[in-house]
Amino acid sequence: MSSGYSRYIPYISFLGELTLLNLLFVVGFILHQPSYSWHAESLLLYLYINGVWLTISYFSRAFEIHRHSKLQHIVLHTFYNSAVFFFLFLLYFQFRTFNYYSRDLLKLVLILFMVCLFIWKMGLHLGFLYYRRLGFNFRKVLFIGINDAVVDIHKFMKSENWYGYKSLGYIGNSQDNRMKKLGEFSHLHEVMQAWHPDEVYIAYTSLTSEEKDLLAEKLSAYPVQVNLVPDLGNFLYQKVEWRDLGNMPVMALHTGPLALWGNKFVKRSFDVIFSLFIIFFLLGWVTLILFILDLFTKNQGIWYTQRRTSLNGKTFKILKFRSMVHNDQADIQQAVQNDVRITPVGAFLRKTNIDELPQFVNVLFGQMSVIGPRPHMLAHTEAYSRQVSKYMFRHFVKPGISGLAQVSGYRGEVRNLDDIRRRVEKDIEYIKRWSFWLDIWIIWQTCWLVVREFSRIKKQ
Image (cartoon, rainbow, N blue to C red; front, side, top):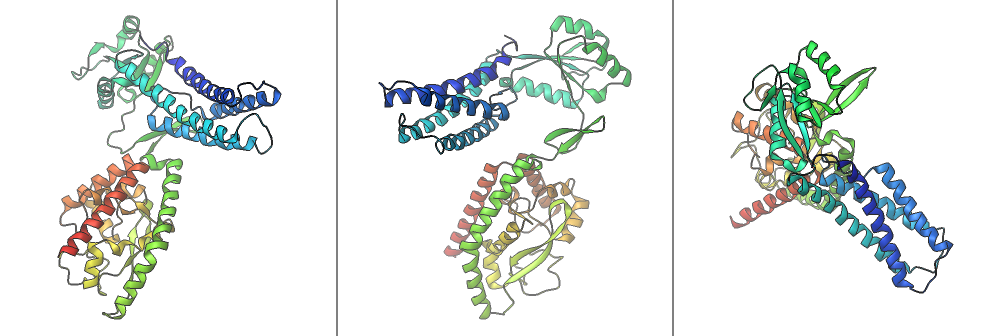
């Protein structure tokens, strides 16, 4: 079966939601008062909850499950709809009184609806993925022109068959053994008639101006979805957004998930909450202990600030607990093993990462994030940006107290250029892969590293 029934998936999703909503509330009503007769007040409740759910669904479009939909997005949309519905549901009872439904039973029915809704949406999504993996509900794809990007898409469609795409091959004037060739560019009409593709993917940058004009004219005669495949070379990007400047479309390249305001909001909210917790429950008494120790040692002071590189290449003053004696090389020379500048207390602070705790103040002020690429000294930023390819890409996000590079084993002294290259690779991977749960995992790994370091010191 081809793609003929895909258009019914949103309707199936939405009808399932309405069925669950009404079935649970009607069954709950009958179980609570089986002999109670229906009247206008009880019917008004059902009209209200159906109207609310219809309105929420219309504006959120959460019922639209496509072959490109990701499970995490479906879950987030379902959670959002459920939260709004729950609020409006409770709001109803601030204005209406009734005796035909137990409040405790209403709470139970509402919870059951939300649970069943999640099961329905996830089951529907996974069910269609499995259905496509069996070879049904697929869309036939024809490629016009060929380049590396087209070959990558072709390989993706072949390997990730649960998306439901069947790659037919390509037509073009060049020869490429990586894909099946169906004919020359001039054979477009014959190929379309023979294979009847549902979608066409065009390697647009590989075509001449004459071929582009001819293609636009010929494809308008066929009911196919047309997709343009740009060749973006070595640009680092995760998402593409089309913007209109006058009558001209412009393609904006997003560097990763954190380019989207919703993800920025989630990350910033977590940063504020987490940093406040650390400042109030940990930083205060650690500061007091270090202040007392400083009075009985060399009295170097407990605070240290230094200029570091932040978001978009801007600078800020990073705040740390002092771990070295005062010296003229602090802003240009990194700490090395057995560094004579490090104090005995400072050695303990650095091994256990306690010297980084004041940076939660930087996080609270929005200069840093809890998780992100570690900020470097200005002198090192200038040097590494010339020596390491794509080094400045790490400054598309806020620097962090810990990061993927640090929990992957790349922390401490940079001994050679290969060390910083590996760290940059991990930083770029983090920017491209970011998710809230990745941040939580890195925090967990960081805590584990700190606990392990404490254990080592205790055994010594």
